[in-house]
Amino acid sequence: MRKQKGFSLIELLIVVAIILIIAAIAIPNLIRSRIAANEASAVGSLRTLNTAEITYQSTYPNVGFTCTLSNLGGSSASQTPGSSSAGLIDSNLSSGIKSGYSFGLSNCTTAGSIYVSYSSDAAPVVVNTTGNRYFCSDQSGVIRYGATAGGEIAPEWRPAKFWKLRGSYSYLKMDLHKAAGTAVGGTPASVEGSSPQHQANIQSSFDLPKRFQFDFVYRFVSGLTAQAVPAYSTGDARISWRTRSHVEFAVVGRNLFQPYQVEYLGDPGTLVGIRRSIYATLAWIR
Image (cartoon, rainbow, N blue to C red; front, side, top):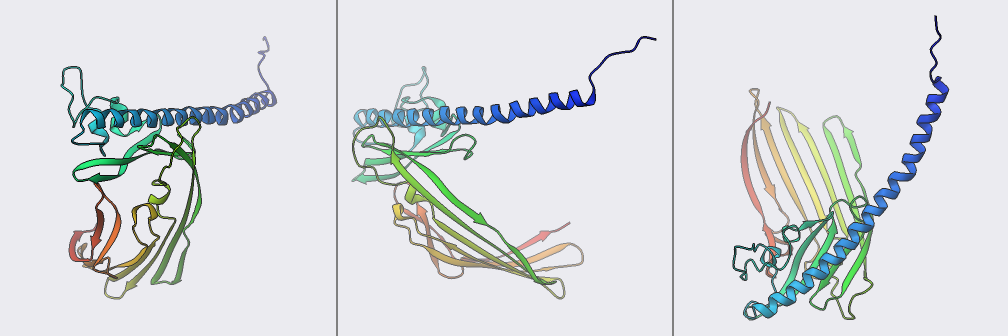
């Protein structure tokens, strides 16, 4: 009987180890190359947006700039361009997502009924996967980039069998710089100042007798300096009772610390907030 030849276990393990080493070297390089390509594409897309905004302003002087991406796109060969579909950018960019980055227009100001300024921004869809840096620009044509640093902790503690505590704290630091190859000029740090630097959350849950439950949540959010939105803290409360037949009745209070709190600057430049609210719910729980 002829003896069949093959690989030994050690030889197979060596081959697998070599493949893993090659993959460990090649995959990070591939990701870095894709990130660099996406970031270069994001800078090019912001330049395209700046050019489109200038063309839009000169074409529709009674409107000025636009604060809506869809107004810069949306026109096909069979359509007549207009202020709501100028056909100045491609469909991917006008949808807000292109080459691993999300794009937006914000911080538009008006003189009378005409838009005289805008800010454009580009953020990676998945940080450290589709991109690392954030980019922004405005009507001056200057493109700035930034890196982010921060962290988050989310501890959980049960002081007693009926009492559970959860908490979280997040810190975000954005640092913007002028991208190479852009015009000289001033750019507001709209992206850097449009995200809260500090956010904290504490949740307390009590399992009470007779199938009652009480939850309280405290939230703190630091201010948005670019949008003149102050820091705020507020609380939510919820008390519920569950019947033996899986029906739950609850009374909920939202934003209880003040009648009204400002959240962010909306379009076209008005402050958007949330009012205090109290309501009841009835739900079937399996």
